[in-house]
Amino acid sequence: MRMIDKHRFLLIAMLAAGIVTLACTAEVGPPAKVIVVGIDAVDIEVMKHLLDDGSLPNFSRLMSQGATGRLETFMPLTKSPILWTSIATSKMPNEHGIGGFVKSEDGGKMVPYTGNTRRVKAIWDILGEEGMKVAVVGWMVTWPAEEVNGYLVSDYIQYETEKGIKLDQQTYPEDLFEEIDSLRLTQKDVSDEDIADLFPVDRTAGDFGIASWHKDYVKMIYATDETFRRVAHHLNDKGVDFLAVYFNGIDSMCHGFWDFRTKQKHPLHSVIDNYYIWMDGVLGEFMDLVDDRTLLVVCSDHGFHGPRRTEDGSLYLGVYMHGQYGIVGLMGKGVRKGSSIIDAEILDVTPTILYALGIPVGRDMRGRVLTDGFEPEYLKSHTVSFIPTYETGDRVAGEPMESPVDDKIKEKLRAVGYIQ
Ligand SMILES: [Zn+2]
Image (cartoon, rainbow, N blue to C red; front, side, top):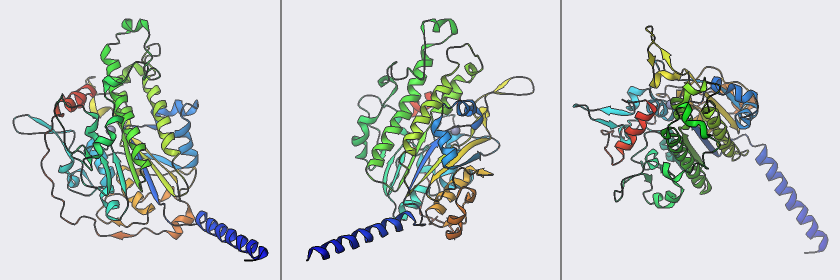
């Protein structure tokens, strides 16, 4: 090849590469990847003062760079396992079969609801069948880990079994457990130093009725969320097309410390705020994974209202402390920056993800696509398509399965006030 031809060849090659790059950035196709960050009980009213004073830069960024709105939960207020299953299926509780935290059997024995009692497909089942590689981390009611096209790390990895007792099916595939075991934290792995920003207790703590269980409670909450955060990034690094991760901490912090929030001089006055600030940083790490091929979905299952009183003045606790509105946020490919999403409900999350990916919505799903959140151009070139159903009838729901960590689960539910 003569020198001049060589240069011309190079130029043509570079142009061709340039054209390819241009075509990619201008491409209007669906995102190649979706990241779902589920955060229990996030409430815009609770975090408003933190947004106003700049303490939540990533939630603020989600609002300016993405599309956000309130996400209405089921009324009357109900329990989180029911809600997170409806978020992941777009089905009503009587359809998906998850009835709460625990199922009371005859004779009063409480067994936690388990994933095998779910009668319908979750978004990760549907996307897996579409050929997408999925990773699901910590989502409520996912033990025993079901077979997926990718990885599933069940919510039970947060519980430690007694010495010598092995809990099976904590992950899919089973041998994924060995791989992520070193990333797991339990309460006793968390030092005072680790939670110094979350729980600033000083020498006078005793005067305020702060008990050692308060600190242990924060350590337990932090251990779980930090475990799920680490595992989610680990699985993301393996290369997946769909990542869904769940964080419970804000809900547990609100249940445990809401009373102190109203006492300006109490040392625990700002522990809920502190946790919001920590979660904002976690959210930011997932936002940083969003490129021009990715859609990020942030959602909560309900808001937080604090204790309510009956007419005779007695307190309603548990789910009655939840608020009617959580939040929803979209960011990334196809999303209309800075827009508001109106009238969103928890059932809308799954149809919206399917739509964004160019995959048909099941006509038997109970939610709708949150079109408010997308660019007009994107909506024009992407119409919502439907199929009658994704249910093939081969998913046989079983009874709740007992496990060696059931007592640990019930202990935690009692601490948060969800069961007696
Ligand atoms: Zn919840």
